[in-house]
Length: 138
Image (cartoon, rainbow, N blue to C red):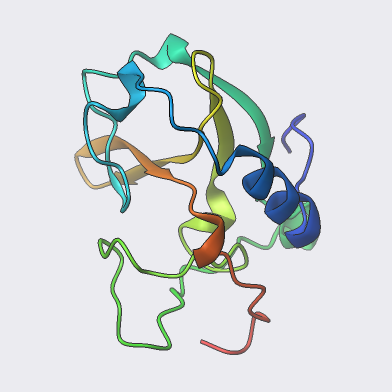
């Protein structure tokens, strides 16, 4: 289990709203990260501070694993820049919340892994896309 603080919907949304008005040009904005992307080389790992997690500790009780179901009620898909950020759904339910050390922008990060690869994925947090969708509404 993670030692990071769990950010429930209210805490995550408040944090996202407080970071919303960042307008400073920064190394972290060299590559558009409005939708999920591979962590770009232009953003060194050391530029991001991990400040919390969206992995709900209740999802790990009794050896359970968080769902792999995605939430796209309006026909979006994983890679879409306007896909909802639904913390109870994949991949958000496995993501950490990070803050850029230089400008304070928020990002979500998780490690995608399959067969023969591991990929660090990242997406900038847009508070307007955060939804509190119950787990059974996919």
